[in-house]
Image 1 (tube, rainbow, N blue to C red):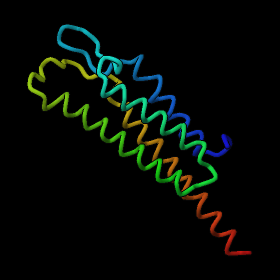
Image 2 (cartoon, rainbow, N blue to C red; image 1 turned 45 degrees about the vertical axis):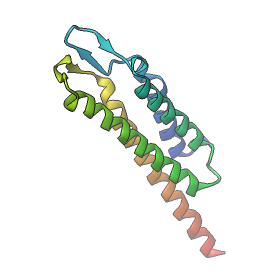
Image 3 (cartoon, one colour; image 1 turned 30 degrees about the vertical axis):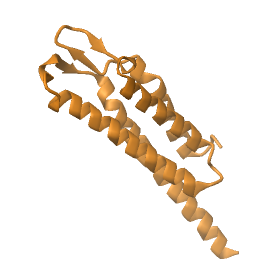
Image 4 (tube, one colour; image 1 turned 90 degrees about the vertical axis):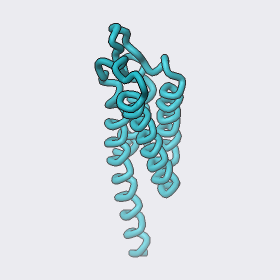
Length: 136
C-alpha cells in the first residue's frame, strides 16, 4: 500500500539508510581523508539493517500493530547508530583524528524524524479502524 503516507515515510527512511551513507562522508580525519559508512563494518551493517527493517515494515500494512513495533525497533536502531557516532567523535582516545564531522552523522537523526512521523500515521490508522469497528 504505497498510497498511505506512512509507506512514503518508511520508503524515505529506506532510501536514506541504504544509499546516502555510502555517498556522503561521516567524518573527515585531520589528514583530509573522508570516512564513509562502508569503511566501518558496524556502521555499514547498522544502516543496511535499518533500511531492510524499513522495507519490511512497509509490507506489514495488514498488521498495523506489528508495523508500529517494527517502526519502534528501527527508531531504537537509529539511536544506537547515533550513539556510536557520538562515542567515536567525542570519547574515543585520539578524538583529534576526527577533525570535521560530515553530513553522514545526521542521517540517523533524519531517519528518526521520518520514523516518528510514520508511527504517528500508523497510530492514526489504527484509531480510525477501531472507531469504524465501534460503529458496526
